[in-house]
View 1 (cartoon, rainbow over the protein chains, first blue to last red):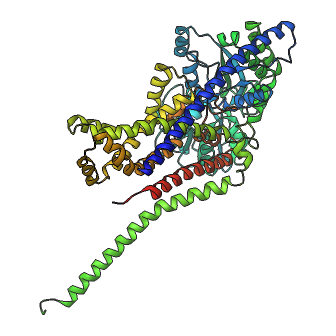
View 2 (cartoon, helix red, strand yellow; view 1 turned 45 degrees about the horizontal axis):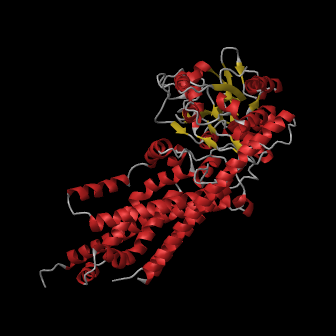
Length: 339
Length: 292
C-alpha cells in the first residue's frame, strides 16, 4: 500500500507538472502571437516610414523537401535566424516528392526539389488552389565516378553509360562493352529509388528504362556508402552529386561525359554554363505564392536567400552557384509579386 | 557385468562427452556474437565521436558548420516527445491491460482483441507514421506538431506496454486475489490495493523499455513532420520539433569528413539517454519487486 501511494504521488506529480507545463506553454504562445501581431503592425508602420533596418521580423517560414537541397537551405535558414532570432524556420529533409506532397496542399512555404515539379503534382496544386513559383538556387553536376585505381576509364559517352547501367543491354563485364577494357565484372553503386539523384539519372540517361539490379549492383540512400564502395574497387562505377566527388577527389575520379559535343568533365565552370551536359542539373525551391504575398517572414527570407545566402550556401557544400545577375533577376520577379 | 563390453562402453561415453563439448562451444559462440557486435559498435562510435563530443555539442543547435553544430534541439525534442508518449501510452496501456486481465469476460472476443494487440506489436513502424499522419495531422488537425509526433509514437509503443503490463498482472499470485475477495473487497478495491501495488514495478519496467524503443525511432516521425534543422525549441505541444535519430541521420548522409564524426557524437548522447532510462527501469525493478 505504501509503495502504491508513493507511485501514485509520483505519477500525479508527473501528470500535474506536465499539464501545468503544457498550459504555461500555451499561454506563452498566446502572448507570443499577440506580440507577433503587435510587431507586425509596428513593422507595417515602420515600413510606411521606410526605415528598412530597424523592423524585427517575426513569424514562421516552413521549408521541406529534397535532401540534396537541404544543405543550402540549412545554411540559409541558420544565417537568417542569426539575424532574425524571432523567426521560426522548421526545415524538413523528406525528398523532393515528399516536399511537393506538402507544398501542393499549401502546408509549407518553400518546397525544395532536385527536379522540376511533375505534371501530376502541378495538377494537385491547381486543384487545391495553390500557386507555386519555381526558382533556381544553384546547379549540381551529377558526377559519374570511378576509383583512382581505375586505369582504363577517363571518359564515357552517354551511349556507353546506357551500356553499363541499363538492364536490357545485359552487359556483365567491362569487356562486353569495349574489348580493350578488362575482362572483369562491372560493379555498380547507385543512389536508391527514392532519391531525386536517381530520378534525374534515370530520366536523362536511362530514359526511364529499368536500371540493372541484383548481383553486382548496390543501391543506397547514403551517398557516403557509395563513395566508400567505389574508392577501393578499380572495376566499380557509380554516380552522385558533385559535392560528394569534391570531398573525395583524392580517391575518386570523375569521368568526362560525352553528350554528343565531345567529352566534358564536371567542374565549377562547365556545370554553371551548362556545357557539362546532360548531367548538370538545377536545384530548385518552389515558393508558395500566397505566403509570399502575405507572410512578412517569407518575404524577408526570400530576400535574404537571393542576396547572397543561396550562393554562399551552395558554395559551402560544393554545389555551383548562379551568377549574381541571375539571383538578382529572380529576386526582382519575386519582389514584383508583393511590392 | 560380463555382458558389458568395456570398449563400446567407453567409446559411447567419449562420444557423449564430445557432443556435450560441441554444444557447449556452440551456445557460447552464439552468446558472444551479440556481445562482440555490441562491443564493436561501442568501440566504433566511441572512437569516432569522443573527440567531437563536448559541452558545446550538447548545448548547440544544428548548424551548417560542423564545428558549431550540436544536438540540443534533438535532445530536448526527444525528451519532450518521451514526456508525451509516457503520459499517453502508459495510462492507456495499463488501463487496457487491467481491462483485459481483470474485467473482460474470457471468451472469443477477448482472445480476438488479445491476438490483435500482439499483431499490432509487429506492424512496421512507418505504417504507424501513416496512421498518425491521417488521424492526428489531418483528421484531428494537430498539424505537423510535437503533439502529433508524440501521439503517433504512443500508438507505436502501446501494444508493447499492454503486453508487458498483462504479464505483470498475471504474475501476481492467485492467492492474493482470492484472499482479497474473501475479505469482501470489490474488484476495483482488489485491483487498486492488491494487484496494482504488486504489478506496478513490472509495468513500469516494461513501459520504460518500450519508451527506449520509441526514442530511437525515425521512420514514423519523418512522416508526421519532424524537422531536420530547427533553431528554436518547441514553444508548445503544437510547435515544430526535431529528435535525435533524425538529426543523426541527417549528419551521416552529408558530404564531408566531419559530419559522420558529429553523427557518432550524437549517437553517444542518444546511448547515454537510453542507458539512463534503462538504469531507471532496473532500479525500479530491484527496489520495488516483491517475490512471492
